[in-house]
Image 1 (cartoon, rainbow, N blue to C red):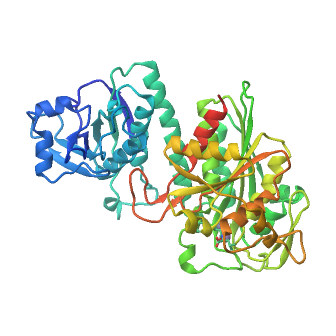
Image 2: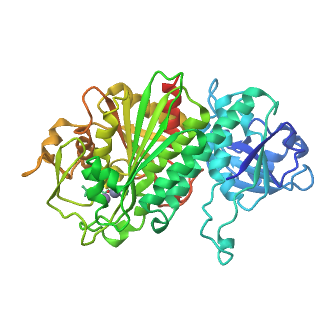
Length: 504
Ligand code: BES
Ligand code: MN
Ligand code: ZN
């Protein structure tokens, strides 16, 4: 990940390999965005005209390189499109900046040192500075662990350092904004790395160890239950799903406490290290990216790490049920009945609807501690992708305020979430001929039926929300803005924002 370093040196004089300036598309575009006056001066006020002659428009996401020709200290100027300039009295949208800078960082991969003054494009504004730092760090991500010299050239190294120009680099508040942003992007990076790790190198026991490694050093109490402990605890869902694999399941509990806490939130993340579908085997194509089926759990681990480093005044418990969903002679069969934690029985009609089975056990377990909130996060259904696509995740809940607060937190953090209902009428489609519940119901509205299944395991009186992140957790398409191909780290930023608000 790209390192951020603060400076007050003017952009035109800064020692870097490239400097970023913002351009808008207003008045026939491109127009220079605030913060580049000294650079423009060095170009005899011809920077915008030069860019225009090159065909630059200032549209969002546009990145254009221009030689500095000795007029400024850096050899290259990079014009970053910001779209239309904000209306009177409005500011540049922090998410537009975050994305634009992310695009520039990707275009500049391989460059050791870049500089930008875009942190002050809205004047002195913490949220803007935070967006710029996040754009730099999230856009400067690459997963290179498996590259050898044979293919290293194909994946350029991310930008080494970004110099961010601020009025006073020693100002306490400025530093705090940068440090907080860095804690969050570190965690997003952790979640992306975990998702991108090949499933053969991330079995349930490895994943549990990764949770220990990420959270124990920052002061969380981390406890790992192995398969014997799971049998003892009656976790029929986790054990059933894990039965087909030669690598047994685990359950991790990550506890963070604050003496000043008034609220306790439990987060539960789906941690299927690989989802083959089990005996209800997926077609080959659908399996290609099922290493990402632990994206919910990765985001829970990453969020706990961030919360602990930020020292938020709230109690948070992260739960990670983790199993590998495989077909074998030991696997559960369609029509098998599992007894879940707490005693409810479930008829497994489709072994590919495994996420809800491991989640249900742990929602029950979390409920035993009577938290104020349970929020579960899961790459739960293909139906989520059908409904909302790959940029927007779904929020379902048994409480209207909680659902709204989660959707708002996502927006404030630069992620996209949308409220979804849990229609009572669909519940009866989950009735089973032989057990308390079946694990599949109506195919139409499949995301909602999955949510209704989980709701059956939420104890009365606990406010609960369910985030279905199947699409947004993993980018199958081309990189865009600060989002790389592969693991995205969604919804770490939303969760940290939600918890920071709840801690106030
Ligand atoms: N892990 C999948 C859901 C998924 C699909 C995540 C595509 C990301 C991208 C989940 O375990 C699954 O297989 N769900 C089934 C449920 C069905 C059998 C009721 C699905 O959505 O097809
Ligand atoms: Mn599945
Ligand atoms: Zn799955």
